[in-house]
Length: 204
Ligand code: HEC
Ligand code: HEC
Ligand code: HEC
Ligand code: HEC
Image (cartoon, rainbow, N blue to C red; front, side, top):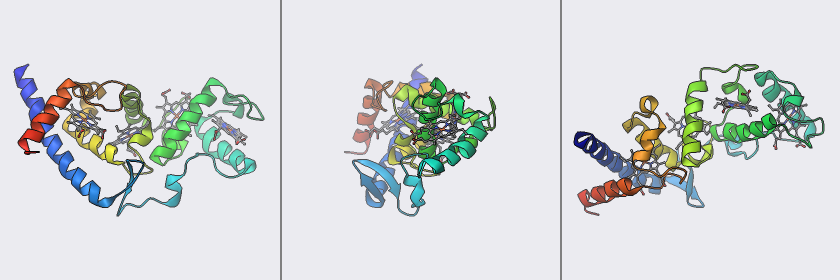
């Protein structure tokens, strides 16, 4: 137990130093809007990466997109999600709406993960873990993702933490060692202890 704690503390220290250096760099390089980092220099996304909505254009264009990019990869008829004039959405339709936001955040179309009725691509596993982490921490995908291959400042921090905590093997629960559930990565008592120790070490 003690040994474990020591390990966590050391991992935390490295984590913090990396974060702190990253933070300095971020302050110099990144464009911020409303306090959150959107994009960094050198990796400016394509214009449509920053789009807000999954379906674009007029009704006809949306219809085409819905048929080709939504119906086909899901292997479903229109009625799986909504009635003809889209005044009523089914439970799957509601879910699809959320999936559209997720897809915009990570800059992909549905076929990135879906390949026909009840089938998925090899991305399913990581996607499920990402859905679980987001749910557990009370954040949406765009908290960390700002389009294809672009991470927000928080996303970069999360990436460092994920590597240090061996998230891929250990899962999201380990994040709760230092963060509060459903509180968007707010630190818990242990997290604050670590942060203060690290600040002490750095003489801040
Ligand atoms: C997997 C679920 C799903 C399937 C299948 C689906 N849609 Fe949609 N569709 C949605 C969602 C969700 C929206 C709302 C998107 C939004 O709010 O921007 C939508 C919106 C639309 C819109 C735009 C509505 C508007 O007024 O802006 C059109 C047109 C449309 N769908 C046509 C179709 C057609 C035609 C099909 C079948 C070929 C189809 N959809 C199949 C989920 C689906
Ligand atoms: C990053 C991967 C990923 C992307 C991109 C993605 N999905 Fe999904 N989707 C999943 C996973 C994983 C599940 C099953 C787990 C769950 O239900 O949460 C799922 C489940 C669903 C479901 C529930 C019904 C079912 O068939 O299981 C709907 C509806 C859905 N997705 C629609 C969409 C639509 C529409 C898009 C594109 C706008 C989309 N998804 C894009 C990963 C993804
Ligand atoms: C707490 C931050 C965070 C949240 C929230 C988050 N992600 Fe991620 N995600 C990451 C990081 C970090 C990576 C690794 C990126 C890398 O290696 O450069 C990643 C990678 C991925 C990947 C694999 C890489 C790729 O582009 O294929 C997928 C798919 C993904 N995320 C989907 C999602 C979806 C869908 C959501 C919302 C349900 C989500 N993520 C929410 C941080 C996050
Ligand atoms: C050993 C303790 C510890 C663990 C475990 C830990 N973190 Fe952190 N995390 C921190 C500290 C310390 C900070 C810095 C907080 C600050 O500077 O205010 C932080 C900050 C963050 C932030 C930035 C939050 C913000 O508001 O900017 C994210 C995102 C994050 N961690 C994600 C994760 C994820 C994902 C995991 C699990 C894979 C994880 N952390 C596990 C200690 C930890």
